[in-house]
Structures are given as C-alpha cells and as structure tokens.
Length: 269
Image 1 (cartoon, helix red, strand yellow):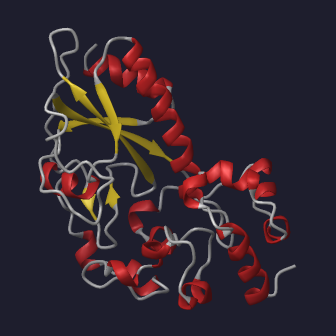
Image 2: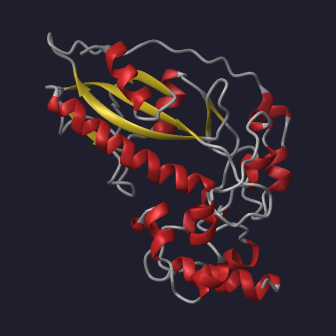
Image 3: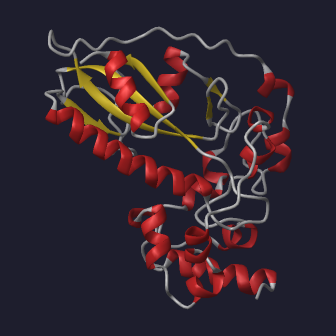
C-alpha cells in the first residue's frame, strides 16, 4: 500500500483530506503525556498520516457542540480505518500527535491567532486524527512537502479577539483564560458557567473567523437535537448525548449540569 491507496481508503471512511508529513520529533511535554511528541517508543514510525474530517457548525444560538459531534465520529472512523489497514499488513499506531507544532514546522496549514489550525479551502472547521506509519518495501509510505504561505490575515483581523467572551485572545491565545482549558475537568469555574454558550466549550472564535465564512451552518439532525434537548439533559438523561460526543469528555454529570445552568441562567423552557 502507498500514499495514494491509503488516501482512497480514507476518503471512503469519510475523511476529506489526508496529509503525509514526517513523524513528530519534539521534546515531550510532561503536562501532555497522552500526545506522542516523538517516536522514541516507536522507532519504526517514519510518517505521520493526518486524517482530516470536515464539519459544519450548527446555527447561532444552538447549544449543541458541532465540533465534538464531528470529533467523536472521526475518532470511530479512524479506529475502523486503522483496523482495516492493519488487516492488510500495514504497521501503524493510532495516536494523538502535536498538530499545532507540526503545522508550524511543516506548513500544511496556517496557525491562527486563536491557536487553531486553518487548512486551505476548509478553514478551522476540521478535526484531525493521526496514524504513525511504518514505511517498508511492501508499504512505501512517504512524507510529502507542504508550504502554506501565511496570508497575514490574523495579524490584520482581530475578529476572534473582539468576540471572545473570555477575553483569552490577544496577539495569541492565553490558554488558561480560554474556557476550553477547563472542559476536561469534572467541573468548571463559576465564570465559565456565566459565559458558556454551547455544551463542552465555545465556538465563538470560529463563528466570526473570515476563514470560515464559506462554511455555512446546518440544522442538527433530529436524533442529535433530541439527545441534547435541555429538559432531557437537566433531568439526568444524558446517555444518548454522551454517545454522540464521546463518554471520555462527559463524565461526572457534566452535560446535565450545563443544561441546568443554561435553563436557569437564560430562563429557557
């Protein structure tokens, strides 16, 4: 199997783009041990295969996190894809890699002021999944060169900084001011509950980004809308919603507490 053949299989699995870049070779970050910063433990890994999944936002005012719906769907698609490749003799490791650091080094996209990666023609409405691949005579995978020229838009724009409800964006992102920083915890600080607009985080900076102007909102399908009905979640019935966004991110009654907060704070019925 080669790059083109893997790319074809990835498209069939629902991914819209496949990027082949060198394997990560950065110093590890102790505070992010789940990310593969280098291949010391996988010396056979020669290529990082970045699988790109596109998604559309839901309309303004919708509480449902479009990103996490897409993230969960792309995760399951990548697991199935990895199993298929392994069955065909490809040696690989499905893992998380430092997307932003790799983007800065290999220029396959633009690292935006809000710290998100924008891809040509797709904007920031994308989810990345990653595979580390061995290159062999049977499976001669190769890294490909990329060079996305920075158009300077972020330096002259500032729309995300002006719109950020947490005032977390200046010339760059102050991570600990961004509410996303707190989403992995069992509970959030009070200030997050006061300004949170969607479940599990905030997509405000993406909504105002000119790079995403071509990505039009879509209505959530009925099953998704029903799973995230606020009264249902507030009553403690979050099983279906958790399946849609992933159980790892929604433990400790998180979705139910958010729903109660939205109902009380905004006077919703």
